[in-house]
Image (cartoon, rainbow, N blue to C red; front, top):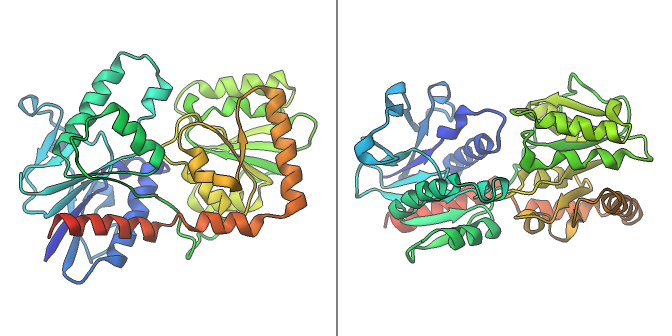
Length: 357
């Protein structure tokens, strides 16, 4: 029996991208594993048992958080014999104690380099990730852009490295649930933690000379929201910019299904999952040209090459006109279908098997 451990420590943060990745990939690993393969999950206490009885769980406790100065910035867990241990987040504090356990490391992104250029702390952040790279036997990332960037800033020491895209579960879509904050007029939708890297403050200008509302859903952790509101006031549209806060999967699905367009002008993404989710509904998607987003949207998205308000208004108007003239909904959906969780899990299982032969 081969025993693979999948690190779901990031599931301590609901309504985030890393939570969703762990949730969806974990489910698919159990669906696509072989009969002689067993999946174990490293989880926070409230997630124990989440994936059902056909799995094992190593539940993290407060004792796991004790810093071990003689181990450097790592917490070595004495968890028994695993053939492969998958670190799913590049800065995870948890690594296997056994030197015989093979390690797969997933680097989601190096977004801090774009969020805080020139920050002296970036050197320490890279050093921590380099420690994980040094322990890894195989390195993966969620886009070609993220993998190439990691190779530029980290020393892979000739280790195998693979892009393994994340995606959506298009075969079993979440049922839409009407949200509490239901728009009363046609609306544009944006989604993500409300942080400067998401660049949402450039969007209110797109409400000029139309009757759309703009809904920006997500957790607000900083005062960046005030900058968005200030921009909305500048264009006289503050009453049409809404912040419904974090939304459930069912509410998010309703927003995707009913929006006029999806807007994602982020300047730092390892992948850009919300863009794929919106494309799965055949919606017109407007992205920035930064980091991984052109890779994800391909020729089926519209792009803001810069954030000059007049240029953005022009791109948005031209994109919407093209969408309504050409009706590319089915082509957009077909593009999105290549990004699915089953393929993600199969890609990881193939790596696990190669390391455990």
